Image 1: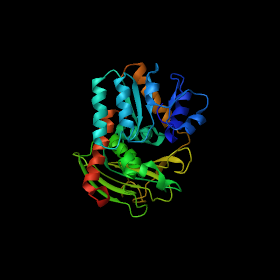
Image 2: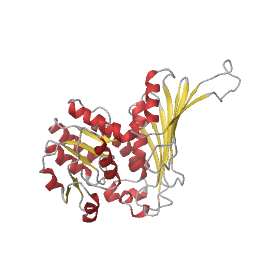
Image 3: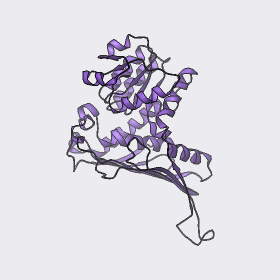
Image 4: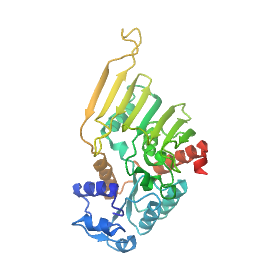
Length: 332
């Protein structure tokens, strides 16, 4: 594992729960972090670790560093699991894909774990079944409140992160939009940073449309004082809502999925207020499920088709279009 911050700690727990993989070392340049790691071998540099006989590299570093670690690992014949986003811009993911194609025996997967949340899994099954018809539109809301140390986070330093809340958190919502509807070719975006005053956005408002005529809208925010996750999917014969998000802190509330079926005057007296089916979820297995899928691809030599480099490229392309369309002064 390269990098042992917030995500590194999460990945370590997931790896140690998986009986088919073994954590043999952690790279972190901070001696204080290495001292706290405990009963696991540590390295102060990637170059020292990569010489060891390891098969998989988990890249859990800030966006500026991730692409080169991915490329170097692929060039050494390693399998790579990399956190989102896959770098700071579309050039970064293109460089990673180039290395992946040149060393095509290595598996590469990115950490879009929201695909593996129980509410999303259930919604995807219902959408794909066709029992509620085709998707008409999709809406998303994803926001957090920053925090005491938010101003000092590397995530708000454009030289390191490449972007603000859209790239950091909104990327998950865009990935889910693609997961349900496929590619969106047309992108309209408005950005602002009126509260935090970073040189990256603290709010992003994005409108999308694909060639099938499906529309999508979402708001990604670092000024949502109540942590919020919600995705609404309108279909021909009903609707689905996934809201709340199982997380380590529980700040996004209990995860649940709501299904409602379309009812007109000839079906119900409660016009516009159909009966709903509500399912609650209490276990977040998303981290474990995505790593298990990655391991399966390696063990059975199957191509990565979920959270692949192609998925990463497509979502980064949408983000690039959004930033270009916004055309705001603090990105010049």
